[in-house]
Structure formats: structure tokens, C-alpha cells
Length: 166
Figure (cartoon, rainbow, N blue to C red):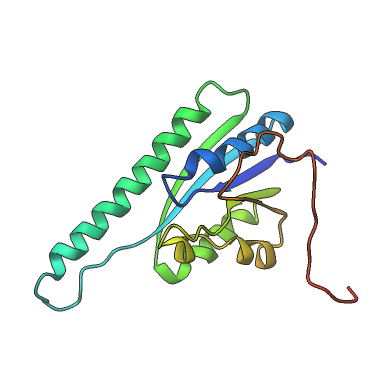
């Protein structure tokens, strides 16, 4: 099977390189179009004045911006001078639409690469949703574990599904 388009969902700047590297190996192997996607939640100011709220919202918005810039820098640095075509996309969407946005983009790809939910990162349950991608996107999903090394990605394959007659 060949993958013409690979979407890699990058949510955390600290893990971006680890998730991107296997996706790049696949893109190189299949001469694919690699799309890096970071979808982050829009941070709104509270609708009415609240003491200390503007400082907290500003700090949160700053952290979101720094994380997005870090991911973008990692993607650009790692994909520079590669044999495959790469594209960077940054989406700002409401918090409730993060998974839907990534799935919408994923439906245009032949493969979605995403990171496993990481219990060491407090925001992982909000920004990492590999289970939803696998069950709802209608596309094959490669989930990169948050621990270990993944040098020979795609050489040994395990297919898992729910138990049942199907």
C-alpha cells in the first residue's frame, strides 16, 4: 500500500519531534505529501470583568502561542531539505471542535499519524485523541507511543479491534 498524503497531528512541542520522525520516515519511503497540523483552542477573554482574569487569560494565550511556535519550528527544521513535499498548517478552533477539525483534515489523507495520550502531560486528554481519530475519522491511524524508540516504523504491524463477530 502506498500513502500519497500523510497527516501528522502535533499537539505538544515537547513531543513533536518524536511523533514527526516516524511520519517523516514513512513520507520518505512512499514519497508522500506530509502535512503537519497543530490545532489549538481559541483563548477568549471572559465576557465580563473579573479580577485577575485578564492576567490568567493572557498567560494561557501566551503558553498556547509558545507551544504552537515551538511545534512549527520543529516541523520546519526537520522537514527542511527532505525528498518529500511538506506542508505546515495551524488551526485555531473552539476547544470543543479540536478533534473534529483534525478528523476533517484527516479525511483528506491516506494515513493519520498521532501521538498516544501521555499521562505525564496534564493537557494530553484535551489535545490528544488518537482513539477518536481511529474510530471516527474513517482513515488508518498510526499511533506513536509516548515512550520508546521507533526507528523501524511500519516493519512489524499489529492490528487491533474490538472483540466481536465482525
